[in-house]
Length: 136
Image (cartoon, rainbow, N blue to C red; front, side, top):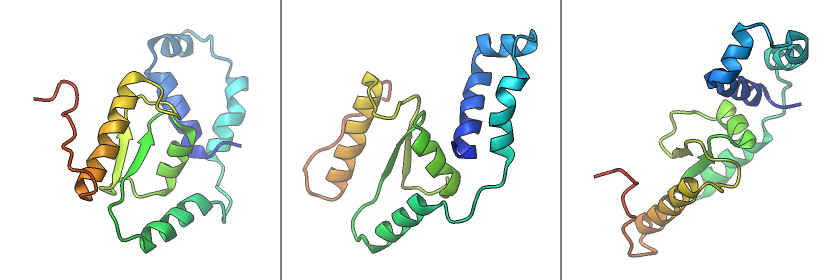
């Protein structure tokens, strides 16, 4: 069963689609088909299932270097992680529109800039990351 955060992210994305919204408004959406997913998203989460976040907190707490949490917006694990983590954490960076493995060309460029930026900050690499496309 997907975590509620993943289900809500899926339906937010669907409602942003003009085609999907028109299907909903025209009555072509079968509510019986989506009812189980909606019910699952509304159901209370079971305690003890936050192990990923707990592991990250423990690991980051013990680490003395620079931390960046790089997430792909469309990745289900990232969506679930964000549901449990403080979204205002300044260490979080989210690549808009990126899939799980950052396969999109803009996502690959974003990922490279972020990683090289952290390396430059830690003074392990004398490199200034190039500006984002469209940035002046």
